[in-house]
Structures are given as structure tokens and as C-alpha cells.
Length: 411
Image 1 (tube, rainbow, N blue to C red):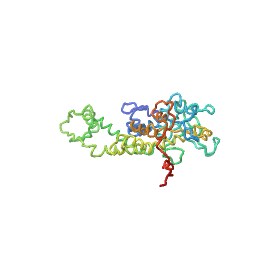
Image 2 (image 1 turned 90 degrees about the horizontal axis):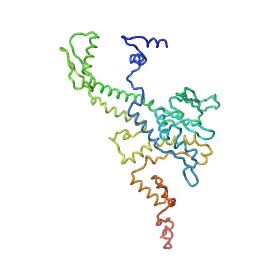
Image 3 (image 1 turned 30 degrees about the horizontal axis):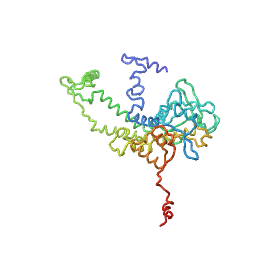
Image 4 (image 1 turned 90 degrees about the vertical axis):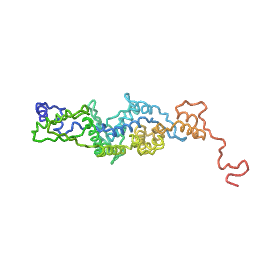
């Protein structure tokens, strides 16, 4: 610390060097202009946003598998916290979208479930960067080969240790041990860093007024100080958006030759687009979802949403449903057939005409009751709408020709 303290006190060219001085950062090997977070890359952030919002908008339902089939759960005391407000500060939508954001950005997401006796009291998100997974293969904490989660609370500075049964752990599919997931930013580090550098290049280009570098030709020799003054003088007239279109004064005997560097010649935008598609593919995001419609082959928005659900969301939702069911519900409730499931109908709904035709067909053929169809459209139930109906002209094949005294299949 003494060396650093002395470094902060020293003066370089009559300039005090403090902790925020770019010169100190450069001396430490840190580029002060480099973005500090991968979130500043547009495609990376867009993919995180799409996945987080996709999960946040899906209602989480609780069902029971009975002898009569799957019915809605009557365990409102268990379901209330997950469907409405997991904790006093977050709605269900914000809660699950935050969990998904942590899962993708850090590779793992952790939720602490606080119980009051056997009753679930509330649920709290533990920011992933403050959680460490501990595998106790020696049984030091009481149980051999048990998994524990060590959480260093950034707000009060306390260290907490939670058992495996107390924590919902959601991970990415990129895992080689099944315990900890890998984040996309780590797997595609060079790709994401390249995208950040391309954005940095564009930002610098705008700062210089879209003007490239230039070569100054002159006769004679200048000492370094004179060169610096000369370059600084030209930059005051030629650099920056405020000088765009202005006349550049050139001293007698000197010649300013601009370097003609075109972005099209280096295929800058093609490479930038290719990098964006690589990042999106790593997240399972379709090109059309990041506004690339060049090779879109979907016949409708419904087909596009269906492909996104099958190719990307299905695995994510299945993992959430399995973890929530196993950790939240007791063994007795699981044995009684209770389980959690996200309602994906909100993203797979077709246009209103297709919806009405499909529901009408289901009601007319005894697949749904009128009240079930009305519930799908968020309409109130009718007193006489809980009866299955079917066309009376339909009869089993075995009864064909019964009116003529002929058994089905004869004649």
C-alpha cells in the first residue's frame, strides 16, 4: 500500500496523479476507454433482455395430476407466493426476469427460499457474483458430498451458508459437471470483446467527425515538442464533429494528405453483423429477433414464436419447472401429483380469427367445454357452460348400418 500511496502523491509534468487519473490507469495496464461491462455490447444486451422478458411474461401455474387428468391446484397457500409476489419488493414478473438475467449473464442464478416452519414465507434472489458453490466431499459440514451455497451479502457484509434444499439453482445448458453452468460471456469472450472493440472504433470515428487519419508532409526536421504542437494545431482545426466541413489552414511548405480508409473496403459492417449473429446463436436467439430479416423464412409471427419456444425456451422452462417443483413442494405433495408449469399460451397465441376457429372446433367436437374456451379468452364462465358437447351425427364405426340391420364392416 505504501508504494501505491507514494504513486498517488507523485507529480508527472506538474499534474497530480490520483486514483481516477487516466495516466495511472494506463500505467497499471488498464485502458480507460475500454467498456467495463459486456452489457454495453448491443447484441449481447438485447439477447439477455429477450430471454429475461420472455420468462417474466409467462404465468407460472400449479397443477395436480389426478385420475381424471390434469386439474388446477387447490393449494393456494403454496402457490400464492410464486404467482403474485415472491418477496415484498418484487412482483412475480420482475422476480423471474431478474433470475433469468443472472442465469444468462453469470451462468448461474440462485434464489434463497425462506421458510417459517414447513410454510414457505418468501423468496430472495442472491446476486450470482456474490455466491460460491461449495461441494463438501469430506462431510465437514455434516453430510458427505453435499452441496452448499456460500453467499457474501454486499449490503451488510455478512457471510451466509445455505443448504442445497434452501436454494433454487438455475444454470445454463453449458455445464460439464451438472453443478455449475458457464456463462455466454465467458464462452464467447473473444467474440464479445471483438464486438465491443468494433463499437469503440465507431464511437471514436464519430468523435473525430467521421474523418480518418492524415499524413503531414513537410521539409526539414522538427524536435518532438514542435511536432506535438504542430499535430495539436491541426487536430484543433480538423478533428471532432464541430470542425466537420471547415477549412483546414496548412502552413507554407507543408502538405496534408488524408488516408482514405473506407469501412466498406474492410467489410466492417459485414463482420459486425456476423459477430452479432454469432452472439445471438449462442443464446438461442433467432436473427429476426435482433432485427435481421434478410433470411427470415417464417410464414407468420405464430410460427416464429413456436420455433423460439421449441428451440430455445422449452429447455429453459423445463429446468425451471423441475427445480421449482422439487425444491418448493414437499415429498407428500409431489407424490399426490402436484407440479408447477409455465403457461406458454401467452406467446403461442395466434391471431383472433385463428383463435376463434380453433376454440370453436374444440368446443363443437367435445374437446373443451364452452367455459374452458371462454377462460382461454379471459371471459367469465356461464352457468350452463361446463358441459362437453359434440355433433349428434357422429357415431362409432361399429354402429355403421345398425339402422339397416347390418353390423359395421359388413356388406
